[in-house]
Image 1 (cartoon, rainbow, N blue to C red):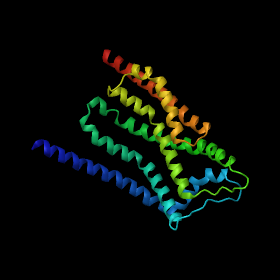
Image 2: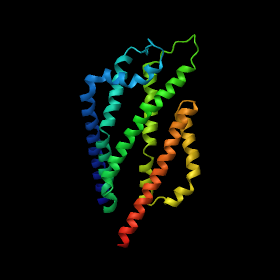
Image 3: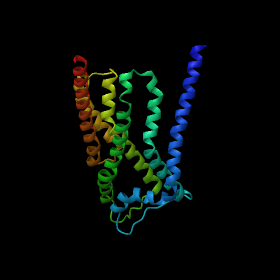
Image 4: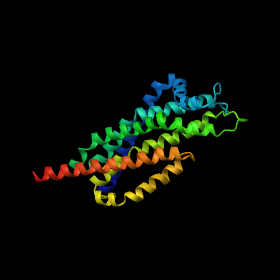
Length: 244
């Protein structure tokens, strides 16, 4: 009976955390809605800069001109509310952790949020220009590129997610080491496989050009090394504190 009560209380706690995270996203979304069109124009800027002068994107659906800016605004609202979402997720799992593990809550939340935002920013400011220029340069002279805004949004969201998750690699490495699932030595020995895996992932999620694949795989490898370095420094610090 006690086990059942505990399970139900955990479900209630999970529901409350999900509601709070959802409310944070909803509030951010409602605040941004009056500027939904401007937000989409900002998102479309890299593509518009790569298209021939005077060319515009098209909308083939009846409600697409309304729904696509709404979806973009919702995506931006999620990014802005990400600290709250991550905090709610951590607050749910924190009671089951030791005190020394809970001390990493704030650094992990802040670090995860900043790294995800940095991944999206890197994609927007550096990758999109290269990718879109590559795509439009291959268009025959007899064709005028006019991308559909719905397909453009789908592509952009996929790329944002790929780069955002990629930039979380240091956090994943640190958590794996801190929880004892793997050791630094094991990760170091697996380096060659991780590098190969990074290029495989990059080949799957990016367009079929070498430049964009390298622009995803190389940061992934560098961030893995950064995560190893930070984990090693934290381990030395922990050993020094224990010996003192």
